[in-house]
Amino acid sequence: MTVKVIKMWTGEDVIADLITGDDSVVELKNPIVAIPAQQGQIGFAPWSPLVDKNATLKVTRKYVVYIEDPQDDLVEQYNQMFGNIATPPKKLIL
Image (cartoon, rainbow, N blue to C red; front, side, top):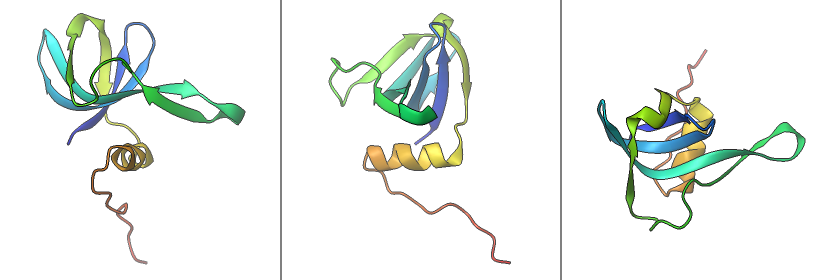
C-alpha cells in the first residue's frame, strides 16, 4: 500500500492508496478528503461517496497539482480506517 496526499486542482487534499500513476492518469483506491472539523481539527469523508467502495478511481493527471507522502500519524489513521494492519511507529530506545 502506498498512501499519498494528492492535492487536486480544485484545492482538495485527497488521501488515498496510489495504485499507479503516469503522465496522463493516476489510479486511486479508498480516496478520502480532508474536511475542517471543530476547534481546528481535521476530519475525513469519502472523496467520491457514490462510487462502489471497492472501485479504483482513475483521475486525469492534469487535475493533480502534486502527490506527496503524508505525515506518519495520518498514514496510521488511514490504515486503521481501511482495515489494514497497523504497525506502531518506529521509536528509538534511548
